[in-house]
Length: 290
Image (cartoon, rainbow, N blue to C red; front, side, top):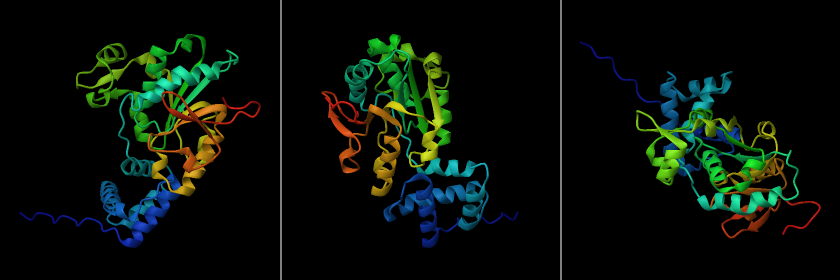
């Protein structure tokens, strides 16, 4: 019996790599250095083969002109890192409920909603952690309308975030009492987030470096933008921060990841050092920052 010969894997040339890298940078703000070549090539070949193409050029042309954008979403999914877990950098959540929210509601009208954005939100662990923290630790939750929005450039992780079903590993910092209260066990070993908690969070698609995409989200009092700016170059970091500045209310705050510093990027935001964590504040025009 003749066995069909296996087709050789597509080859990514130096010119292909540069073309892809420049395109991906324009669309996402993420630039891959030369030392990421193996990482990029491996994932490009997986997408070329998965879509039935035999060459980079055929796949690249089809992907760029696909009206649905499905392949671009799949590409972003394989090229970005979405690893996270519940209560990551918990001290920032402590600063939120102990310092920042009490400051934000001081003198504020009860009719004004407090809006919190998590961008990128990945598969939902961060916005759900914030919702649990507010429910358990902020006395003002019953008195204020709080909106939590999770946003991400990767559409596939947004679907998983909306499902709210998690493997035990990402729950390693969730106490047994919290798991019993906020999750229900599933037959496959995963745990599903409480339905009321899940329904309290809105998940949206957004690109941090695209002003039009950001405009659809509106304006927020607090933004968690953690561990994404490190993937950008200096120009794109400034673009991202300028976009964020337009979507944080005067007096509002941004939290970055522990290895990120706003002072190295822009002077638009003013650092505030709380006992629990550092945050960055959109300056108030009418009074000095305390």
